[in-house]
Structures are given as C-alpha cells and as structure tokens.
Length: 112
Image 1 (cartoon, rainbow, N blue to C red):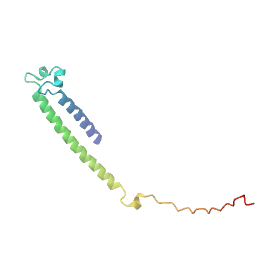
Image 2 (image 1 turned 45 degrees about the vertical axis):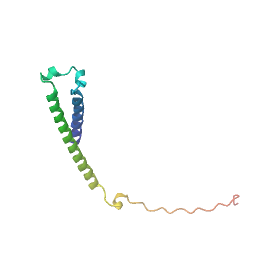
Image 3 (image 1 turned 180 degrees about the vertical axis):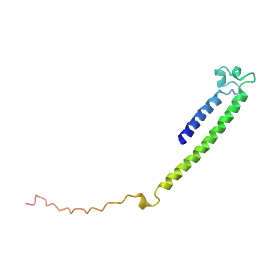
Image 4 (image 1 turned 90 degrees about the vertical axis):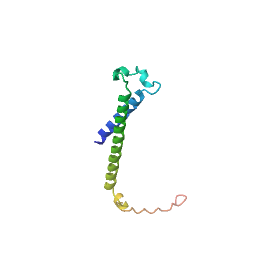
C-alpha cells in the first residue's frame, strides 16, 4: 500500500508540474510552444479546463502527502514499540571476562 501510494504521489507531482508549465499565462508561456492549445479545448480556450485540472491535481497531491505522512509516522511508531526499551535488553550478554596472562620480565643480555 505504501509503495502504491508513493507511486501515485510521484505521478500526480509530475502531472502537476507539466500542467502548470503548459498553462497559458498573460503573455503566452509554454502553451504557445505547443501551438496554444485553443483548438483542442474549444473556442473558449484551455484556461477553464486547465485551471480545474490544476486544482484537482493540487488537492490530490496534498491528500497523498498527508496520507504518506500519517503512514510514515505509524510505521516509525510501530518500529519503536518493537525495539527494546532498556539498555540491558539492547546489549547482548557479555561473555565471561578472560583473565590476562602474566607477563614475565625479560632480562637484558639473554639471561643465560
């Protein structure tokens, strides 16, 4: 579910960027590069359709963002509940300490 929601979120983000770039501002913009687009959307132009599409994509983007944040918080909360709470539970049991072997002093000159 989380992966599907991220995929939908990315698709909506990409579509939102494309739609915003294609919209025709006051002086032309990217829509003029593609021939204006008025003939595709009728005599009234693409402005009302593009505005509605931008609004719908923005709403879907915000909703998927909120759902992803809530799911992420829930996933992190469930991870912390499974984690050990005390230091003793987190640390593995230490093996018995090994006693150091005594170091014998060396005699200079060979000692024979």
